[in-house]
Amino acid sequence: MDKDPFSDSPEEFSAPGLNPLFRPAYLRRLLASAGFFPQKSRGQNFLIDRNRGEAIVRAAGLDRGDAVLEIGPGPGALTRELCLRAGRVAAVERDRVLARILREETRDFTNLEIVEEDFLAVDLPELIRRLRSAAEPNARLKVVANLPYSVSGPILARLLESGAGFTRMVLTLQKEVGERIVSPPGGKRYGRLSVLARIYSRPEIIAAVSRNSFFPRPRVDSVVVRLEMIPVPELPALDLVFLREVIRAAFGKRRKMLKNALAGDRELGYSEPRIQAACSGAGIDPRSRPEELSAGDYIRLATALAGLERMGSIQIS
Ligand code: SAM
Image (cartoon, rainbow, N blue to C red; front, top):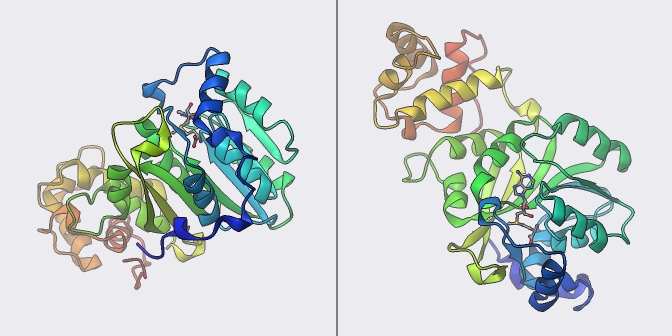
């Protein structure tokens, strides 16, 4: 964890009082008057800590040359801060009542598109196309989100694999998920999400957020993870769907040796000799455990398995 971004001076942010959504009393009244009751199953825990909220936005390093995708804006506390700083914002909220509140709370901003949909079902390429075309030419594409707990893993996987060309993501998630994302190979929490995150980005936990910073208060604490995305051309020419299949098969049997985990996977459909050969071509011990392999190892392994020529040195650790 490097410098705590929450300790910076708040001068550059909106003066206290301008964003009432961080005030618990205002938020409660707003939700109650709309007849809204937060649902745990939808991860509806709203940020009520102004300093944390502003610092999350600050970690994105925004200016008018940025186009931001926000997932799960809720009533709009972060959304308002994003609209104040970025050139263009698209916010995807699946809850109908919250989307209505959000529209009202952000009515003064003309640089915002609210999309009332489930992010996991939204036509992402089309949404990104609209966001880009409404933003400045060559705008940097960023993601800022306080993610709903229950679906933060699938949402992150979708973002990482989207090929949308995001340059940075600043995500607030359950502490345990954040630790999985940044876990190094061999670590207790190292798994599919850690490998995916490292294939597409340099992930880092930049701050802790206590459960007391949310209304209603969840049972667990959160962290803010910043992911600096790796430009796509740095990735080797490899079928990314196939790569994901190899990672899925390996971690499906994480206690087995790699060769047995992969050979036993019907969907992958490779024989043990082929897997042994691919491992030796990729310089990987077939007896190692799936959690001992780095993101670079998985890329080399999938490349060798797919029979591709490109097996040169890959700079991902
Ligand atoms: N951004 C607000 C904040 O920081 O206070 C709300 C964050 S809250 C943790 C998560 C939000 O995601 C809720 O508003 C919830 O309705 C929304 N949400 C849950 N599942 C979603 C999905 N699949 N697609 C889009 N939004 C979703």
